[in-house]
Image 1: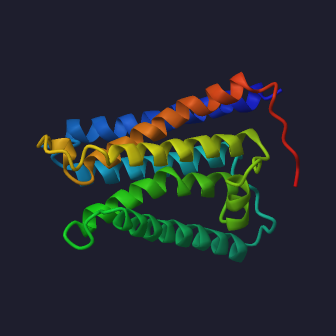
Image 2: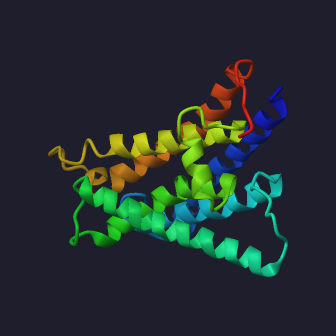
Image 3: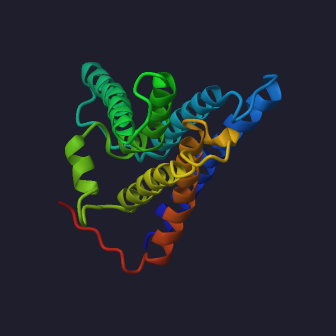
Length: 219
C-alpha cells in the first residue's frame, strides 16, 4: 500500500546521505588542512549547509512540502519569513538546552551555537520541509499516535535518532582519554550525525517492515 512512498523516501534519504558524504569529502580534497577534527566548525557548517540545501530542494521537487493555501506573493514571502524565523529560534532553543546540559556558556559560545545550528539542520529543518511552519502540526506529529502519513512516521524516527545520537555523543567528553574527538562539540556533532544517518536508513526499513499494520487517520 505504501510502496511508492517508501521508495520515494528511500531515494530522498540516499540523496541526503550522499550530500553529507560530499560535504565531508569535497572540502578535504579542495582545502588544504581540512579535517573533521582540525577544522571542525568548518566541517560542521559544510554539513549543515549541504543538508539544508539538498533537503529543501528534494522535498520541494517531490511535493512533500505541504501546499500553500494561498498563491499570492505576499503569503509565500510570509511563509518563507516564518520558516527562517523558526529555524533561527530553533538554533537559540538548542543552544539554550545544550548549555543547560553542561556546555560552556561563554568560553565556547561559538562552538555551542554551531552545534545548535547542526541540530536544527537535522531536525527542525525536516519539520519545516514536511509540515511547513505550523507548530500545531509539529506538536500533533510528536504526540502519541499523531502521525498521519508515512512521512510523519519517518519524521518521528529521524528526529528521535538524531537527538539520541547527540546525547550518546556527550558521554565520552568528561573522560580523560585526551583524544581529539573529545573536544567540544566534536563527539556530540558526530553522534548527532551518525544518529541522523541511522534514522535515514531505519525509517524506510521500519515503515516497510510494518507497512501492513500502518493505519493513518485524517484529523
